View 1: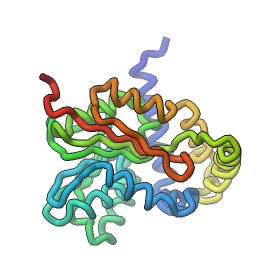
View 2: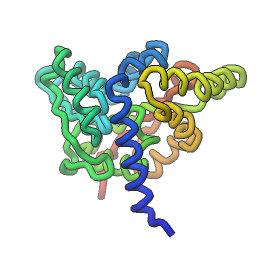
View 3: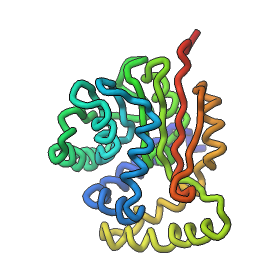
View 4: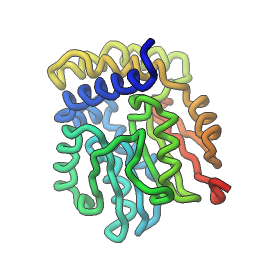
Length: 246
């Protein structure tokens, strides 16, 4: 029987290859497929981090660093943001985005593994992850790592695709997501497959109510979630207890 570790390695290799294929069109397609709502979603997610000027933030699975740059806008030139990703092709696009941004000098990019973050305990004021929690080999392990590296009192925030509740809107959304997104994605990146994976990955990911409970089971407090744009995405946020580990 295949071990869990081997399953993790296979998923990791699949996801790395997938994002390598779409890196050059990732930002454009995110904007188009979200009807230009992705910027507002990121801004709302970072608001839940409760960052202040001069703060230190982490963005896990940073991709093209757009969420890291939103953190950088908040912490300012006296602060620091680290964006970590395991896909060199995505980080190459991220570097170009940093060069074009007035906040790019605040962000440090690191190639690394979200399942084993290369940072000491209690380092960051917050840790975010955007549209990636459903793609990692073990999302609970990634959340544990995010909690570990955040300071007591710091925030762990996830921005992720969600499952709408409204019956009619829900049907329209899944029609769009199952049929049109793979087609538009194929036209955008010129290959079959990457944007067909999106609907499948969402169907196996926990509902936003269940993810809230998982945040709490892992030890976070003040856990809440917000459904945005009719529930097509959700932002989950929790606080690391001030007496963590006692």
